[in-house]
Image (tube, rainbow, N blue to C red):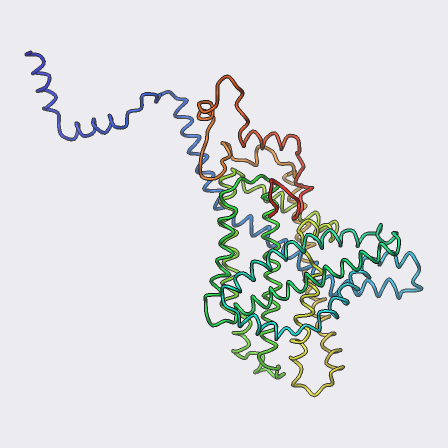
Amino acid sequence: MKKKSVKVKKQSQLPQNDRFIRWLSELDYHPLQTKDSDTKNNRNSKTDVEIEQLMNMLRIPIQIEKFMSFTLLASLDCFLYYFTVLPIKIGVRLYSGNPTTSRLARTYKERVSLFLILSVTIIISHLDTSKVYHKIKRQSAMKLYMLFNVLEIADKMLATIGQSLLSVLLTKASYRNMRAKQLSLILLSLTYLVCHTSVLIYQTISLNVAVNSYSNSLLTLLLSLQFAEIKSSVFKKFDKESLFQITMADSMERFKLLVLVTIIMLRNLGTSAPIQWDITAIFDKKLLITMVSLPIFNIFMSEILVDWIKHAYITKFNRIRPQIYDKYFYIMYRDHATNQQDYQERLGLPMLAYVTLSIVMLRSSLFYLFESTQWSKLTISVVLSLVWFVTLLSLRQVTHRTLLKWGVHIQSEWDLHRYSTVVTAVDYVPGPVVDGIGKMDHPARKIIHDPETTIPPDNTEKRNDRDLHKPDSLSSITRYTMVSKAIW
């Protein structure tokens, strides 16, 4: 009894701070915790991986914008081709001598493309876009919100049909086919192009209504549609092919937005007032405000911000390093440098629909700019056509030369580092791939599954096995290829 009382007395004489620290250590006691060097090394490696994940998220915007800059410039080069090089190529090949069968075969693709553009322009030119504008403007914000969603879905569905139709029609094999089959393909392509151009016209006018509206409610709905992409894609499992698809989809959305916004600005400029051709009118504040619109700036910046956030979290959750975008970047460069049609098919660009949309929407607006002059309508049409042809040809030459110089730098850098489009384990961050925010490591999977049966492969093992059997699968991925149960 004496010894026990002495022990209690000694314990009560401990300082207050020491007793508090001892109490905290008892709360943090883990009976299965080991203190060997392996556990410390595992903790250090996990810390290094998490730091790398955070640093990779900061590198994503640079990689994304490099990819977007090249694809936007290459898409602009393809877009301007139909206004400049296409008519020149047809004229040179047909009128450099007698139009023989071989020359007609060489210009088959260009002649069919020009026929479709002119036919669709003539058919849709009867549509009064001003009446459509006021009809859409009278609708409520909720109806317009539904209209945006329906038009977006229709645009993607028509783009897939158009890609299949035009890829079959604009080939040499189609030229050798029977005339009845060839004529049916042309009629189907013409029907598709009329429908797709009409959808794009309604999309452009709806966006114009949102930009010109005095209420911010409609613009807020547009921005909410963009941020809804984060919810639909971030907390999902992505592999290298589906990430390539969503990157191409984002690039195509930016180019489409650039085309629509340019059309809106030129229409607003043309309908504000006919240009008085003097120095004071060029620097008029009203024209500058029309060209640089705050809602348009907000739409562009929100699109860029959404892309940064979306790709940063997708690569983090799926443990993909940013260097994978260099492989995407090189594939797009190789397609554009090899064949323009291959580039458009991979990116899923409905370029003919964008060309006909621009002609239909800007024809009357640009003609209106010259109404204050004393020229006849025929003279105005000829002068306007020459001015825009020379302007677009100059812009196309600058764009094409820039792409050629950039391509030399891309190829030399690729050869210097001896990269390969084959995805290896180096392109992935070590660790298990998760399907969102939950985490399931290997020890937890061993406890959950029956020890007598084989443990099913996790996401990381499935990905490694798929990369082993399909090492160069990125080269066969296009915008509208079904990958991982989804098309982005």
